[in-house]
Image (cartoon, rainbow, N blue to C red; front, side):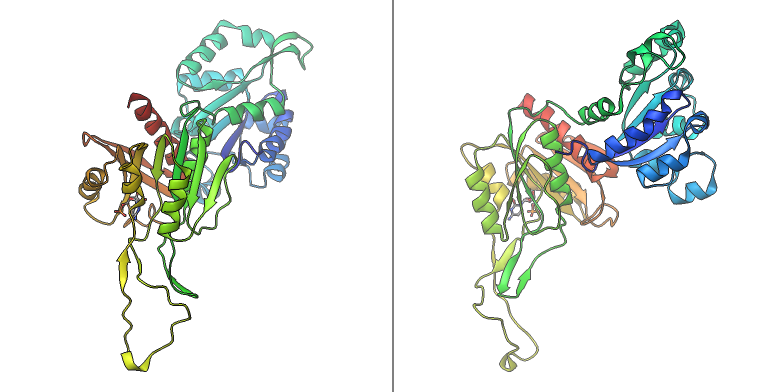
Length: 402
Ligand code: C5P
């Protein structure tokens, strides 16, 4: 199992002798499936070469805040947004002091201020420097602000001293990085997620479908597993790998999807992110339809309504906590609120598919969640992975209140 599958990690390398272990750390993070981008401080470059870390991470190392070429490739704000986790290893006493003060005088410290990702530090320094009251106060302050501290370990040090201040080993750091994505908020819950488009056949070679890629539903499945849930993911035809520990069931049409959902019941939570076709051809032709001269230039397809999967499951006696999606191109919140009521939902997630940067098939999303009291909560545009984790955390909190 790759515990960091597709997670985006910025590895910050500070100026300490433990930087030699950062090379191994890049390997261990990638072994666990992470995408790694390395940022080095000036001091870090004195201990290990950028070339080593570039070769191991497979990407150029980011070093300077004010380098026009690097900024053109991936600017510092973009990199800060890209990250799911910023892991600084080694984190020197100086770096910790600068972070505690909110100083942003190089690329790494600037990223920490600019990111909404989790930030973790692996302190590495001489034992006396670690024990110093200033460092201890900084460590405490950073933890209070929500930064994670991994270590340090106690033992013999490069300088010959013995005591606390050794950077944790690469394996241990990679496991702790993975733990950052693990939550308990849905432990013991069965979560049913629908995803992707449905495909409604016209004849043996043609069908009606839509632009849904399934990315949001798959990201939700991953986030729900990380939150401790047992996840059943029922998906229409998509080109996506199955997230670890997710029970995936592939279906084609809306009716297949409904049948698969009913078979997977009961569940505690239903998240319906599938873009289900509202209509299907009344009859599926047994043979490929031919151009028929008697109908002139036209072809009339008789369509009939598909069942509403979400509304059907939300109407059951063993109804789960039900969350729907409203992908709209206009009057977003109005339509979303109406759907919440019509389908008897607990929450509805509205997203504006007219905006090409967050619509179907895009990598990012921005959402507004509306509850039964018509209270709206918005999450700003970011990667679908991050939106999924925020949404799952929000839903889990409402579920425990319900
Ligand atoms: O009515 P509309 O299709 O806009 O509603 C969107 C929400 O309802 C989504 O959560 C979608 O997954 C769900 N839905 C469904 N079955 C349908 C149509 C929509 O589960 N036939």
